[in-house]
Image (cartoon, rainbow, N blue to C red):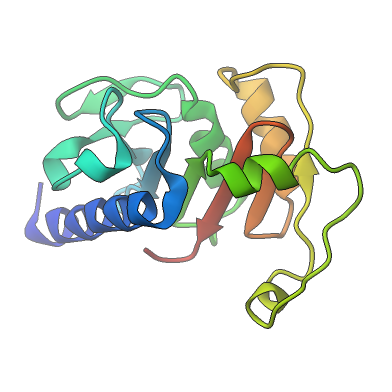
Length: 170
């Protein structure tokens, strides 16, 4: 791994810890990823560790779009298709997060569209809500359905589950 990639993954590790401090932690269940700059897939937070436990580039595994772990120590999350299918659908996305903060899980239960109530919320002209019969999105088809629900937006609530949000950089 070159120094630029390790620097970016160290920054991603810091983002994991910030998400934990901001209430996105849910034991070991949340995950954050970054598109691999060499086009091999994406770097995903390894499983069995909470967001607040991610310390450095060593806490990420390289996963291809078929779900195969290519590099890194530890396992990959079972919901890897969330990340894979969003990266395949959206070339403008470089970072994907899926978390289960209580506020997003509650808001995702509403059937009506959410309206912005603060200036910060105006950034999101619309936050779609994805509904799925499965508790976990573990197949490519489920990941594809979520990426379609996300559409051109940068966040999607997941009904009675949590939220997936993205960015063009860390």
